[in-house]
Length: 130
Image (cartoon, rainbow, N blue to C red; front, side, top):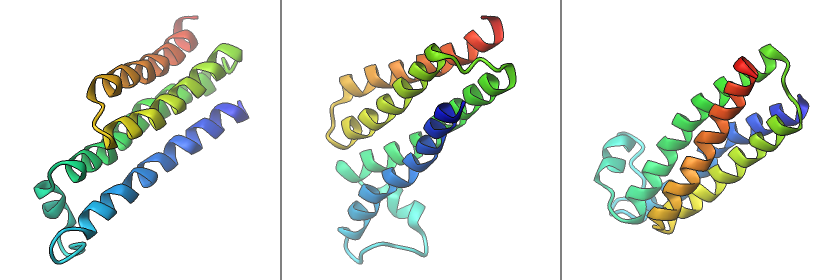
């Protein structure tokens, strides 16, 4: 179970990793980073900055689903080798997802998103119905 909780911890860090490129994009704007109204500035970003914003927010969205899957695995005590593999697939897909978003590889990004989300749902489904 420790390994699966480790993957959860890594996944919890990913939104903050995803924030770094967003901060860079915001700093490059006229006037620099707008700490008074950062969401307004983020909404006005285009290109890389717009993608970095979306990647950042999506990291929080994915975290909620993955944390739920880990919770179900913990409750049902099903942290076996398959669950561990699925957990690492999720983490790897989320890291690759960020890279694909930042570098504008939309088709690959969608495929790795699908791999990650399916791995989280399979983890939860195996625990509940396995």
